[in-house]
Image (cartoon, rainbow, N blue to C red; front, side):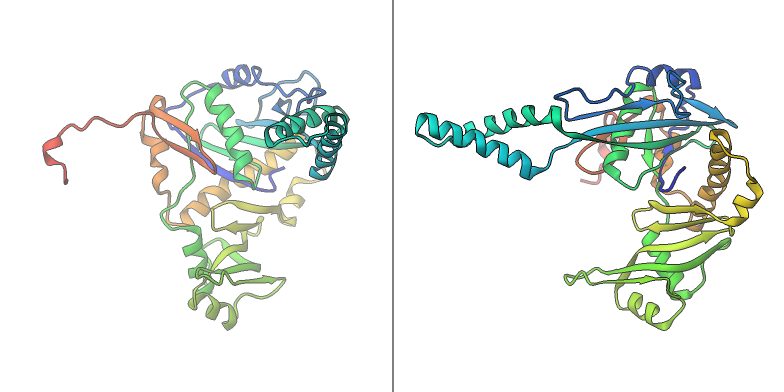
Length: 333
């Protein structure tokens, strides 16, 4: 549970209940793809029980599970089917299909093939911390995160989020830690790193299972290769890879945590371990990066004014409308 994390700050004014979340999720439950449906997505019971609740609470932490399914239709198979249809038209009418007709043939071919296509399913854990006001998604793909955030914002009245932001960028902080060889308090640097040049060369240097407190690493950074990934451990309890985008990848719990958990297993235990450790880890990481930055928008702006718009890559958050200029005479332009 939670191998990757994209963290959002929730609007402080949102005071939704678990019952309201459940009601909202019930409007978009997951349904498998129909015969000619290319993709399907929605919510499933996180405990895995048929007809179970879609929003579960364990120790005051709310856990949801998002499921998506897509039909696997290789381009080569689709193109071959289109060509067969085009050949049949040429044979019957003595002409080759035009561009518009070929587009129509492609749609027809897709409808013919979708009922026979294999399906691929993937799921994502979603964690809402209603006290600390964090939304955490178990994914390393921003596009998938946008899909989930959009569903939540559309379904929950007054719900607004902003991607977690810090005063010091993750990249600048990682570069400082590698040059100074002094990780922040409570953290240690492990043996994996990726450095990428910012110039046109886009040169990349990767270290795996290699000590990073060496002059070579320091020289690379000083010469302009900036860290994009750095493996670290927090408090000898959580190992992870920090990305320059502030995404957290390859999360693992150390033997210290697993030994304390004992042999008990199951959904409640897994949630308690994951949220118990990560709810302490996230604030410490934020502090190591200088505290929160622009995300005060999620803490001070009225919840009803927050809006989320998904445009290309990333979720963009901000006021639904521009504020009124109370003193236009003092404008700088």
